[in-house]
Length: 351
Image 1 (cartoon, rainbow, N blue to C red):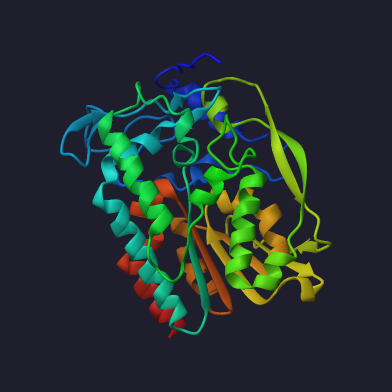
Image 2 (image 1 turned 180 degrees about the vertical axis):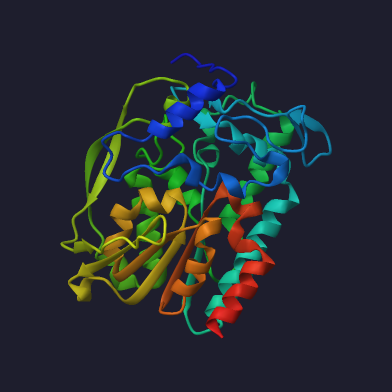
């Protein structure tokens, strides 16, 4: 297949309109409002608004890479090989983060350790960017920021695979080696196949018997990818998908009108699930994967990481027996969960 080159930026008004309608495809899980995909968590040196306009202090639209050099921002959508498209800010953060990435992991690990010290079981994981899964489909010759990005991607992949922390659950290697379609070509997120790998590895970490009960039927799903929507291409993608077949039924509870982007559920029979109360704290990757995650937990509760939800997240820990924290790779260095202020808030709440 020919190599695809995409426009450098979608115009402001067009992008804003497309973002509002992105994700109305026929996937099993609804897509998220774009403004709640954690973009507010981008550090100031990489912040953009919904129109793709740089809002950092650098009015020229450049940022400083980890090598000390200035670089122009990558296009919002970057073409790869075989029809693969990537999210431009993933290349920007790979070049810019440098040591900040490992520091971000350490801060998240401190939060996990703090929660664990109160007698709760805690699992911390990172949902890899697509750039860390399909590196064989990246155009390395035309790579945004050149060697700066390539070195950043390599270092981040190494950390994602081998970060030494007792609470950390690595996912990248399993996702990248699986021969199935684990991520959408035209979207930033994993497919239900990819989220099922997360679910299986999470189950294995929590309870080996629980892991042995997970079964999936392979099927297909159609979806309008967010990256194609950014480009103004109304062309849904069809990809492999899975449906849980472990004979667990899920009853989703009513939404809390006072809290945005949260969900509770009860899965039964209880003997086929993880007992107790589990809170899953994550972003859009956990959200689009809830169809494969809900059957794991008898009493489950998902909360999206946003500034507005931080108080609610801290309070949700009180009644939990198990805590699962997921942060997408592009926000590891700047996650709201990694701040000293949030750790202090959690310490006060769980005291």
